[in-house]
Length: 206
Image (cartoon, rainbow, N blue to C red; front, side):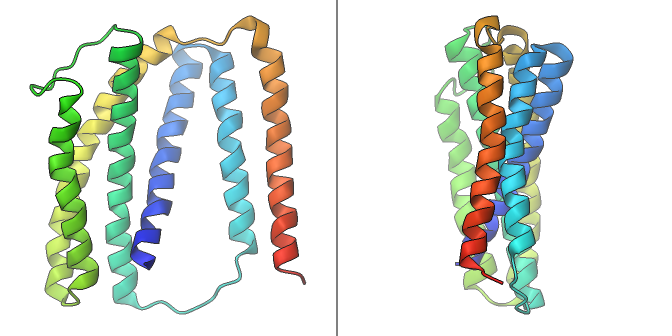
């Protein structure tokens, strides 16, 4: 199931890029304290992933064809990250604040079903082309399918960015909890990587 595992790093990468965009938007146009909290929270998985990468000792050779198939399929994770960003920000903009309206003709939340009607079969079909059919032509057929998916999901990213502006304009961190929350997040930034490093060291003794 290496192909399915390859989806996770791309989804994580897309999520990280979106998170960085969110932080920049909040610090520039919203509550700087909230942006700082987002930044510190982002550092927890970043430092943890860095530790795991540094400790990884696997040097098994990879088949080039398999590597390209994994890479191509993993971009579906990027598309999924963009789509989820649009959904989450739409929920906030419409349901939480009530300051936005749905432009999709299907309405909200039925627009999700319309998007999934394309994305779900496309994801399954891409998996079949890349990992169930071993011919080179299936790899070539999956390439335009992946590009179309990414193109459509980039529109979700743009829509999500517009929705997120509502969050930037309305969300703020109450002054009474700023320093307490800051201390909590800083301790988490220290504790989580150190704990993970010790666990990895125990599993891989020198």
